[in-house]
Image (cartoon, rainbow, N blue to C red):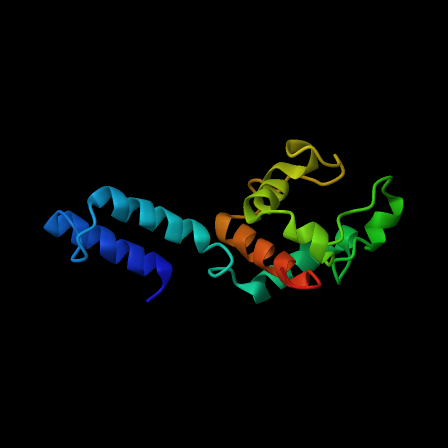
Amino acid sequence: MGAGNFAINLMIRTRIFGRSETGFGAGRILMATGFLLLSCSNVCADIERGKQLYRENCAPCHGESGKGDGVGAQSLPVRPADHTNGALMSSRTDAFLRDVIVKGGTGVGLSAFMPAWQGIFNEQEIRDLVGYIRSLAQPRN
């Protein structure tokens, strides 16, 4: 059973019985549900779909391998992020990476040359991209 189904199951049991069989109150169940759903970001990512989206949309600047050496990077005054840099990528949370994708560089205090993709990618595609970007980091984070 996936994390989302588990969480839904717990919420239904809580609703019907007033508490789960384990004796936790509804507040604890809801808090655990939220944690499970939030921690599901990379687990629920389709890495292959993320790779396809990355190649189509990100590789022109970030490069096919994610080193920040794409063809478009040559004309930029600021080098795009190196997604293979494990030290850099481990310092960035999934929420931060999501915000960079959605809001663009200026939305998170980075380069204005990183465009905002809000309205272009849906939430699942963003999770897929974040999952794929995480897979590029060496050593893996």
